[in-house]
Image (cartoon, rainbow, N blue to C red; front, side, top):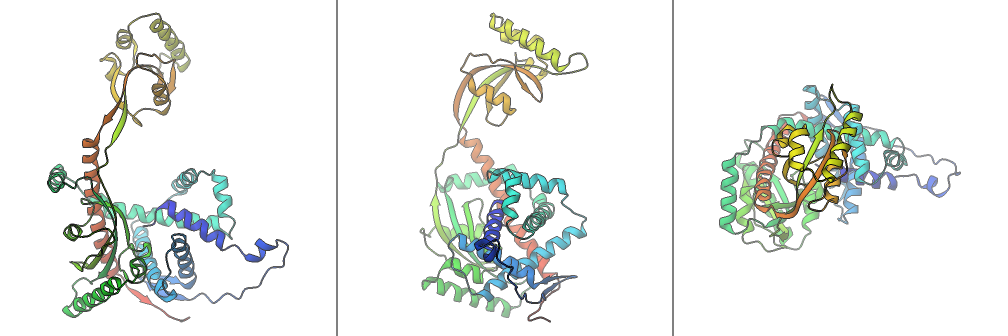
Length: 441
């Protein structure tokens, strides 16, 4: 699925490119009359339809994305076929979401729009102004985003929520990766899939293998892998040129691991058979051996929280008094035990142990980062109440082992998700009624 940031970039590019030329050249020029083709049905999907305007808009978006990447475009009919298949799958997923009573409310949608604006260093007003350079483009973008969020939630419920990763799986994979000496290696792959239908006949399998071999021979003869992936691949990544991004051994399907052992950067595998079809992979880049260093601070604090006996103003006065006593030389640990309302740390004299970035409230973290070992902060207000903190030490901790374990767990989950999503989408497509229409009938 296209990420929200790339969706935003494509929308902007498409909208800006689509502004009427007459308006851009001369705002006072008379409107230009266009004879729009009649909107007709291009596909029937169960009880729904896809019309030509939907297909045209989707093709424009994908074309803008590919041009932005500098990718050579396939012929229009080939691109339309790939985009139409993606629209069919989108329609099926939205239909299933509706049948399950799933919706994305305006509050959730607005939160996501705010997040997108921040990611692109824009205010929401600026974000809207850019989108509104096209006709009704802000509303179009909102509804497109709503659909993407709905599909994301559907996939989370139907696929991601069912995936479990056990400690034993993490242990086994880490052991395998260490034994191979490649635990830190990551691969940037591109991929082409020639699909085999479920319960395929021998003739269907033979036809798919012949098509896959023809594709492989064209690539080995010098044809562009990206262009062929866009035009020919049955995978969800087809319109991204087959790009799978960076993947660890743990993240990719097991059937890719053995062919990778002999691939050099730029190399292309032979045909790789799976229950789902015939795969071809290309190794684009390779990297590895990265350490994960985390800055940590050993800190202790005294916390006063508002309650029925003490208002926030009372606590501000009390925390100022405690600050004066600390600066006069009284023992931090003793005062924390007697006064702090963070009961867990109060029993340890206010000691929070080693704290990493992002583990405390922003105001607390900012104050902590300004202090040298031994220094005491002025009172700090967070949503929890009023704090005084003292930094005991700073360190840069090599957290690679814990980080790698978490990463391996996430990669196993992502690999399982990719495999399950492919099977789920194929079942969804195979069980649907889809009829393609041509012309205006």
